[in-house]
Image 1 (tube, one colour):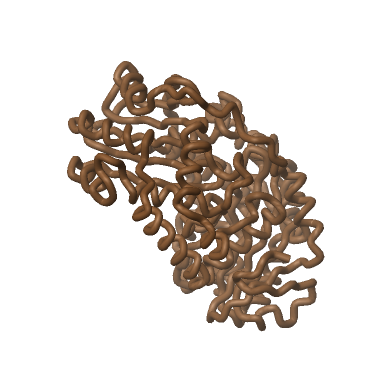
Image 2 (cartoon, rainbow, N blue to C red):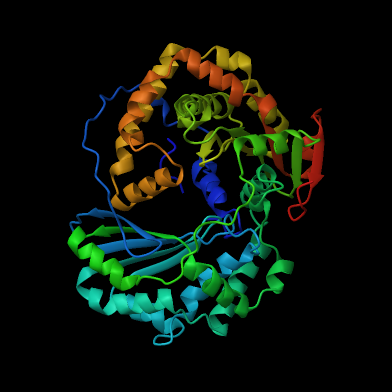
Length: 488
């Protein structure tokens, strides 16, 4: 729906990798299609009031998105610090990943090492750290009655982390092991190499590697914190059993005003629909084959879409639902899995960013049926198939998407995630209020137009992952590489 989306073993392309995993990497039995008996059930649209997210600033370079109200005596906050490599392209991609682990495992001067997390756990609090290409994220949940004990710990952790050699060693070992094991599963290889292909030639096209990791010292993490993390723009997401009059002094105490805040990201080439498509179209091969001995294979096709705020966004959502995003009612699941029994899973997924979008079509199958699946995917992704989509299929897709809309508001932190994402993408302030009407306004001609533009095999690149012989009999231009080789 283009709303909230969301872990890889934490290479640089984590955000996209995680999206791929949760969107398309599910495995189910081959024998039945349990969605068949409900796909035509009609549910009347639901009406509800949109939750109002409150916003306020807290010192220089800190903005807060706040949603009050909680049945339980809990407070949940996330601090999003915009210090990723998108705005700092000179950074080694391993550094943010190392930092968030070393940060957590080093603790503070008053509670070094494991004592820091143990102390928080003793108060019933949970803390985690994460990193992606945009930012690092600190997540904390705690019982409100222990706030006086927890906030000083967190304040020291955020403003003066220890970042000692012990924490660095733990972080480096974890990332080293993750890199060494990232080729164990065929799905991990497929999604990583697809992201590297899509972002080839950009700052996002890099994955962590052992050689680069070996050159990083703990002093690099301290420098990263002092020069980038501590001075970057940050957004706090806060919800729980408190009101705004309590939230403002809480954040002011936790995150004191800073003397220095970087004015903005360093200028880097914008990753856009046009640049990604130009680079993808310029490749001399149609198929990238990644060699991995296995009994299964994955066929994954990737194409470029317009940005989130593009007027065609709504028609694209509906086309995706019909083609592969609608579960067992989609063409992919019906024709590849249900009718032919060729797939463990088969689907499509769309991913939108501020300046571009990406569509993925994927099928996991036996190695012996790889070519058959590839041919069938291309048959579905054709102008002929798009031309045959009916008004009834469009209405069914509209109904499903509109009726699922309410679930975007089931979780308060999820609401804040979506609000932040819409702000990052420069979406209009009435985006959510108009969303269902915009979906309903899409015509069959709109759907077919975007379908023929973005949902045909001639506009995508294909990635095969599996044994070398799975490409036998395929006539398109093929380039073969190993899992650790760079994209040619």
